[in-house]
Length: 538
Image (cartoon, rainbow, N blue to C red; front, side, top):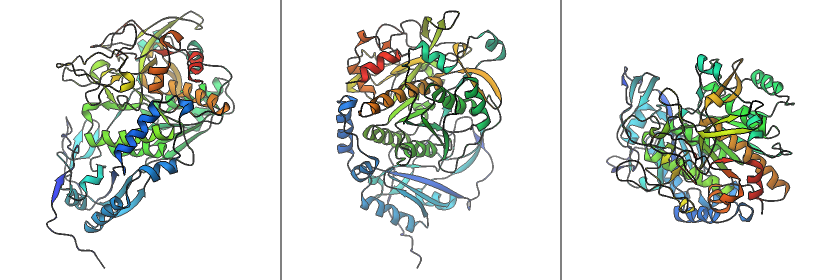
């Protein structure tokens, strides 16, 4: 029996779902109304207040004192209510949409239907447009839901498939590359005094990728050149149909993928690396992070993210959906590290104001900024380190004050300044930490058969991921919990006098300058790895 669609049901706009038109795009023909697409609905947790309280309790404790949830406990405690799922199922039946997947842990329901069906179901008009970066399906304005459904839905993602994020990797031109001094990741690890005797054994690491891919041949050649044998374990995991798809162009997203893998694999070679490939859309980004957080088979304890975009380029619903996933990560003991961006204090936005990059601006994410290092001729000693800033011709570390997130309690004693924008808004300060990111003092990688040097804050997120992988190995050896949500620990439990975090006091990223203590270019500073791990122990 075919269910009849309910006529005249009142619909209301979903808060935070408003989309702006894609800047620089032009209409490009019509969409096929019969084309089948998939859309992800993210549902609210059964008790947002209790969930936030549980995260705040985690934040107030030292890592070794925390009682993390298992992924199964997370689903049972904070998954959607049965009533919420029932409302979604009824909505799908009423609109002739098929339910492809239900995931209580991720609080997601994936629906399938035609463009015409989704347009009617959500009260949106989807259009085809041409942009300099490609042809996309877009919408503008809000999404509409039945009044009884709106209170249980956090986000509706995937109607619009424009790119949501960009890679934060930077390559030098041939002339600049010829003059650059580059390093292997293990060399920078030694310069930063990463602990010896730890290699990631027993640890699982997740990397989020929104394009590109890797080849086994490149990985084998690269790690062999560093004397690392056997080749670290690397497994590609498909999310929303995306796969490991190397483009063959070393100047494209393959450079990002290879940098992330080769950075972690060369510093913590015995760790198991899982690369979650997803489409570069809001739905793909959220689904990839949720897949990693809730992966009960591989159980990564750290997630490295080198993709992002200015906060102003996100919908509120997209940010709130990722925030819920990052809270989930904190509850199950997973650290999330993200690049702070490569376009200075503007984050690439051309409105003349300062902006920060999301997800690095999330209070549940370790935001990673960039420096430039100089060393002795034998590359064994750091002789200088300043804020990375090659503008106007090149990149610069992102950082500043969030427009969206208030100042976290654990950052309240860091002397975070007001925003450089009119009004002096007080908010979450970005980044938290830093590391070498300037391509002119960058990292040698191999991609698509070529060996070359790269930089960008996308190098710093996997650098810190490798270090914290060592910390988790050390914790496991001592029978302790993983470091998990590390931001409160770094700000409140690592004394400035310990030498575990080396302040960067020279340079600027545009609107903000470095100086003693925390700053909006390099955060608390770059690590002294051995001393930091000592501070993380009981």
